[in-house]
Image (tube, rainbow, N blue to C red; front, side):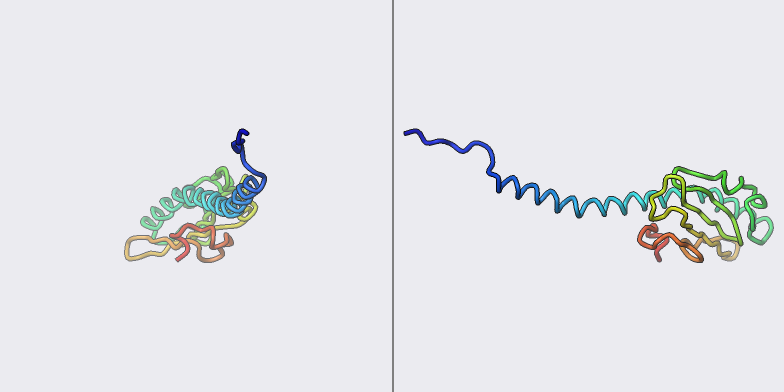
Length: 145
């Protein structure tokens, strides 16, 4: 009599592998979702850099912060856009980044506010304060403080 060797996997072994893959996917997908939303929020901070420079220069020359894009020498708010940002606006002396376009539903139509503070000739920025409506979990660590 010849002894047969097992070839392949049993059904229970395949079911265990599928269950493990399902558990890993259930953990990985939300983590990846948060990562992509945080990347979209960071695009807004990148687009706001030009406005930060313009506001700092305006403050250095005039001693006050501008209250509109035009007075700071920037294009209209709707012209400063990105893949996930629908506009960057200077209003009430702060920079307001509005998310839209292809942004995730969790941040679409929400805003991130960057507020300047004069410190004896220099300007520092507070991120995420004021009327920021982007959920805190999606803000970069520099804005969560």
